[in-house]
Length: 166
Image 1 (cartoon, rainbow, N blue to C red):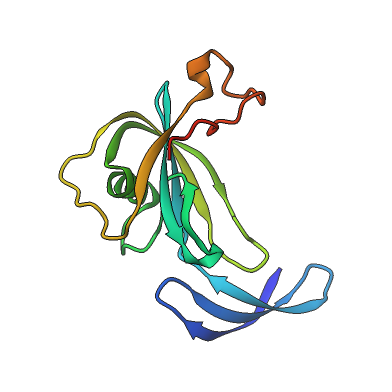
Image 2 (image 1 turned 90 degrees about the vertical axis):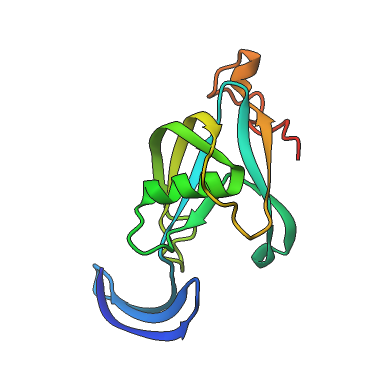
């Protein structure tokens, strides 16, 4: 795919909107509105018993308490994905992790948003030290892990977050 033209129609503090014109492999040309996003990270933080979640207000979906795994935007200059994930886990849940693994990078809504979300697994959890809590209001909670019942983590007989306490 070849980018033919790009113009910014809106500059925001989280994302910009651009109108872009492309030539596809078959020769056809299309114009698309694209939300340019700096990218994000998400953290699946767990131990043998608990998966950690946060409940946060999300105005875009009109929900005062959306339940989600800790996550954040790559909005600090010079900060890499893993560093951002470590910061977000500490800020949102108050935890640090001894082990980090890259699970997958995904495009949550590639039809119109450029955001790439990198998902990490965080284990070996302990209380985070020396990192201030984020000013935005979030509440952490925990759901029981299916591995704590002796079931396989890949089992579809019981959803992973079925016993979240929030």
